[in-house]
Structures are given as C-alpha cells and as structure tokens.
Amino acid sequence: MAMRGVSHVELFVRDKVSTVRHLVSLGFTHVADCVEVDRSSALLGRGDVQVVATSGWATRAFIARNGEGVAGVAVTCDDVPAAARGARALGVEVSSLARGGARVTGIGDVAHTLLPADGHDPGAPPVGRRWVPRDDVWPAAQGAWALERVELRIPEALMERYTAFCGRVFGLERHTSLRSSLYSAPAGVTFALEEQRAPVPPGPPEADAVTAYGLAFRALPAPVLR
Image (tube, rainbow, N blue to C red; front, side):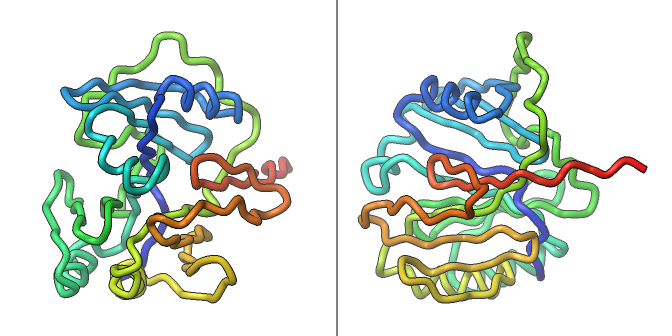
C-alpha cells in the first residue's frame, strides 16, 4: 500500500471566521460552507490544496487537549482495502465510507480518511457533508500551491503505535529530527509528529514555505509554455 497524496486537511479552530480570513489573506479561496448540528465548516482551496476550517461544540474537546490545529487528514491510496487491513491489524477502528473509502480512528485525536487514488478529483469537495457553494467566490490567487508539511499532535503514550501506523498503513519513511518525528510521503508531504501537550514550535519551514495552523505550503513552479 502506498499513499499517493493528501486530498484535504481539516482544522479544528476556535473562531472559524478569523481562520477563514487568515487563509484568504494567504491566497486561498473560500468556496463553500457546511453547517451541522454541532459544528460549522468552511472549505477553502488554492490549486489542488483543500483545507476545511471547523469550529463549534464538536471541536472543543480536541482543542482542549491539543490546541487549534489539524484534526483530520484525508489521503489518497492506491489500495484502500489493503490500507484498511493494515490499520485493523494495529487495533485501530476502521469504518467503510461511500465510493470505496474508509475512515480510521483510534490513534490519538486525529481522524484519517483513506480515499481511492484511481479516479480521485482533487477539486471536488470532501464527501459526506452537504456543502453549499458560495455565490461570491473570487478567482483563485495566481500561482498553484502544494502541501509541504502537516503537524499532528499525538499523545506520548501512542507515539510508538502511530509510528507503526505511518509505516505500515501509509508507507511513509521515517527520518530523524531534533524537534519531532518526521515521516516523508511519496507525494512530497512531510508529517511532523509532536507530543500532544508540547508547545508547538514555529519551524523551521523551507525558505519559500508559507505556514498556518500546523500546515506548510510551497509554491509550485509556473508551467513552461512552448
């Protein structure tokens, strides 16, 4: 099983409105909204990068334990059933989703969604919610972005188990760092694991990276016209 890319990342935040404003100031476009009983979410995108900002009652326990940050990661895989079997072998909870996907929970507070890479549309909104498109969507900022780093808050007692999860389920390669455990995906995304209650260090990101809420983005080179 190999992870092919990140479909979207969900942030749990105290103030969705201010988060949306900050991401828009970085060049993201606010494209849709979803209001549910216990939460309110906004979908933002820039190029193939999609970020969901969520606030409300459903986010309070997560924020109390971890602070604002990444609460969910959806990745594309070349073999979702194999990834799900690998997750079950580690004793985590796996539930089936529509269109061949799976949801993995039970290792810390971060939820993981596995999506088939075959036929995946990077511009489609995340499934499972009733997204309402915005009427006042402005054109996207110039220049495509790629997701470079995702910081996850993991309880110290579960760090070893999550390490096994990253390797066996996502096929990530581990490399050492002075400040965290880092795992590189074939898609070029680095997952940085931080202890749940440790203060979040600022970096260092790449020189040309833009950071926000535990995420780092990098600009992609413009296509060469021939």
